[in-house]
Length: 215
Ligand code: NAI
Image (cartoon, rainbow, N blue to C red):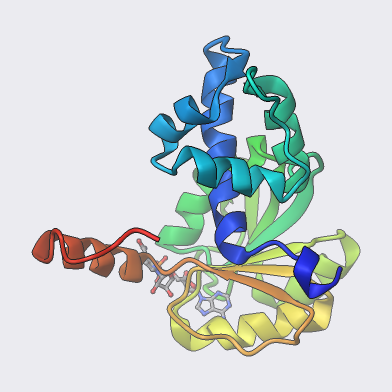
């Protein structure tokens, strides 16, 4: 895809929100929605929504709006949620266990095959029905089980070591919760979840209520 046809990262980051709202509408039995109504729900302007969706071919019809089921299905495809992913978690402490315990990721197609840790006290335990294995087995396990996504919930000091294992094993994407800037090959995709940064942003807004502009 050449540069002009590429979709901006800001648009891509809005897609999961559209997808979530459309899912809620579907569950409520609502079949049709206008960009104005979507705007009220999402907080994005109607023209922004139309522009965002036009990036992918535009699914609306003038005077009709959007067919909720169709748009939900198409956005799911665009987000790659129309297929499953095998995942593993490195670091089976508080956060790793919480992620493994949340069934919603599996329901969305992200199957957690195993957790890995270096603490012998944790190895062999199960979170729901997912086993905690020795991190020494991680590389082999990934190669044998067609694992595409590696989750990192180790302390930041171990995060690069885990990322190196993921790289060596052919993982395609890393979902990183450790507060570390990881160095990986260019073709490996990293999505960082920095909970602290989000909390500190909240703190900023609490202290500077009107000191910002929406973009
Ligand atoms: P934790 O100490 O409960 O768990 C970390 C686990 O990683 C331990 O079980 C440890 O044995 C394991 N570990 C250490 N080195 C390893 C290695 N090389 N390979 C495999 N396993 C290894 O820590 P917690 O609270 O779960 O946090 C995990 C990460 O998430 C940290 O980087 C933390 O900064 C970050 N984080 C956690 C939050 C939370 O709510 N718990 C919030 C924000 C960030």
